[in-house]
Image 1 (cartoon, rainbow, N blue to C red):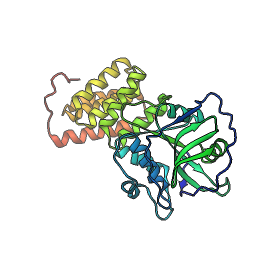
Image 2: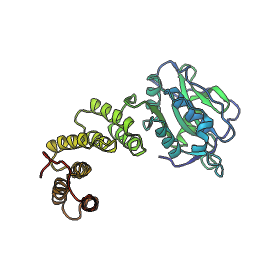
Image 3: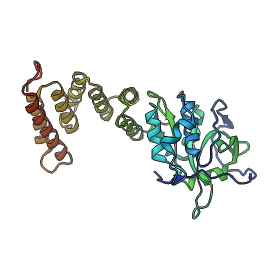
Image 4: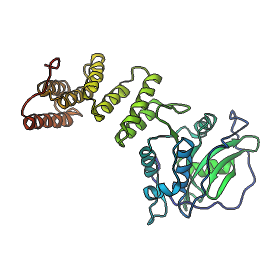
Length: 318
């Protein structure tokens, strides 16, 4: 990911279209229903994000996003802030990393793509956020919501160069449960984990379930479902998910660590200590998770001492 700041530069004079040689893309695709918000000075980030969020069904305006995104001293918005703001609105921001082919696939799937451009020079960058809403292959033009223009037709070669100079950074906004046009397992699960970590467990649960429909048995998604249940106060549900995962993979130290936490949440401290000690024995000294497992054990011991007894742990005995 390119950690650059977009300061929202303006576009210069229009250039004549030039063939970009994009073989295989549709002759013409344009998402005409995509909303348009003309940007205020240096605030292309809020305008672009409001565009794609509104297209995904979120009722939000650039003005509402500006306090979350705009950095006055830098006159722009960071990419990480756009991702975080998307999650705060219950949406899954999914990064585009497959270049023009993946961008066009999302357009064909009906999703506008938020992109970062360098509309200056490599050594003198002018960062800018815009939203790609279409492609006209016959004219060799990409169609954008950009700056003060609701339909900027940009020559293919010029757009691709400006995007390439910004690291081809882009994202689409997914409703929980939706998959991108060309889903990548690792990238999607990483995005869902960030949604979970961003305080959206209910949305993450829907997204993890969609992942399991796409990739049945996926261990990371199953672990995530257990974590979401635990975060939502459903410790018994989480316990069941972790146990099923451990039935298939007894050596999964992460699942056993989390099972211990789920048991502790139910006041079953003896069973919790049994599981965490088993995880530590399986992992061994110096294992990557050794420190985490030791911390979990310490927390369980402290909590058991504070509570002064166990709850109803029938069926949970070690």
